[in-house]
Amino acid sequence: MAGPNLRKRIGHGFVSRQVFAEKAIEQVAMAAKTAAAPGAKKAKAGAAAAIVPGGKLGAGFFDFMFKDLPPFTASDADLDTLAKAMKDPAPVDQPNPDPHDNKKIPSGFTYLGQFVDHDITLDMTPLSLALADPGMVKNFRSPSLDLDCVYGAGPGPHRFLFAREPAPGGSGAVDSPKLLIGTAQASQENSDRVAQTPQVPELPNDLPRNMQGVALIGDHRNDENLLVAQIHLAFLKFHNAVIDHLKAKGVPDDTLFEDAARTVRWHYQWLVLHDWVERLTEKGFVAKILQEGRKFYRFKTKPFMPWEFSAAAYRMGHSMVREKYSHNRIFRTPNPHIAEARLATLFRFSNLSGALSSSVPGQGTLPSNWVIDWRRFFELPPPANTSQFEFNFSHQLDPLLTDALHKLPGATGPEASLAFRNLKRGVRLGLPSGQAVAKEMRKKITFTPITPDEIASGPDGLVAKSLGFHTNTPLWYYILKEAQVKGGGERLGPVGARIVGEVFVGLVQGDEESFLSKPGWKPDLPAATPGTFFMTDLLKFVAKAADPANPDKELNPIGD
Image 1: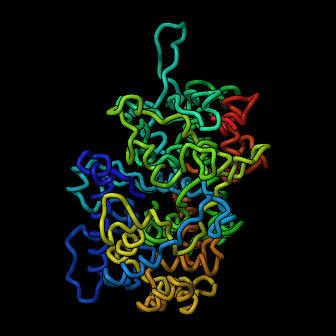
Image 2: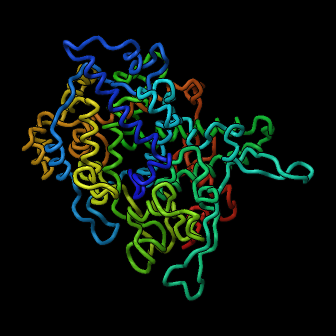
Image 3: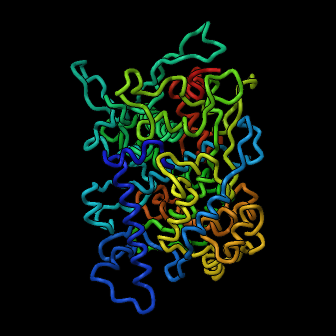
């Protein structure tokens, strides 16, 4: 999701790699499709290696899961027409209840999903090399759930990510195995309490930042909006809590970081598969793929990133975004409040996309009144008094995007619509139609695909039908429509679920150091159900480590 200042920052190197990488990826994809076309001239030496997973030059970063399917084509005008029909109706006055809520997926998972996306698509390529090597073969790493968005290159090369601690004997300071945590500055109290308590005190609940307000984290994209930034902060604190947990169990200092990082990564991988993927698909879906094997996401030695996943199936997260949120007791829609927590505001309270900058005195860090109340975003116990408490569900999985995503800052015309950008990107990449993918899948698995009449259902579907897209459908739109029709807006349909499920399982299977490398391993950190570990368990573990006597304080730092 693009933030207000995204285009302005291109010249400063913050997002240059990402912008040029997407262009280069599209060029490589189009070249691959052209080379595969009948009668095409023989490709230049080395060109094919750029898109062959596990090929001579190593793991290809991007490739097709369904290499032999013809590309879907459409004009920009037709894509724009469909994109305009993919606009959600005006939001209701209050964040809850909302007729478009997905009661199966809390809204925190929308941004956990974005955090995961940044983890598996991290690009460390310098801009100069990205421009010189548009195929990205030499410099893109293989995707994996390894949290290098959190750890970077580790305590040595990226010691700026890590805290210092007093040296033994009390003379000076030494590097510690813990990650740096930032401080949210004291800020205004809510309108109903300002007379008694003028300020919310400073809190240890911001990303660590330098003098310019830039987040000191492994992936700058995780300071793109406030919610993904707070998710990232939770993982920083999770690592630190695991350090304390293992140290108390007697793990020696010389292996403490490595043991903690492995523990964090393995629990995170398990969580992604069983608390994220299975919310999008269905319970037991991961075990089914592990038992029966991956049918479509295949690679020789190392995983690659499928275009059908990155440019279509996983972009279902854009449908889950809400127009506004009940962020905490201060920033919510009903009174008393200081203001609503609208999507645009959540981008403002970041450095990459917003206004956290030392250029304005006192605004280089997050204000403490914007610290998240986790109970409003994940399934944690609510307060005893719920008069000022609203829970945020994600938006339904369907083809409708919230209004703000049709009005991206810094753009005009069709390019201001994220829906149009996604549809156009699919065409430029040469993605196949949804029907072509479904037909190919049914050669190996059994399911009933959505029909042309089902695609044509609803106001957006009627527009799709008028364009002929009900029988030849853009893959991204097909997956969203399938989720609406087959999944009731609560989960993905058979095509989307299979792509997402197989890719995530494959990323973990393809990592020689993942938890699957140790047969029989199960999560062993404290959890509501031993042998499992969900996002609520992670947040509770962090909260108890921060204040064993009052863990609720960390779940809602500004209090009720």
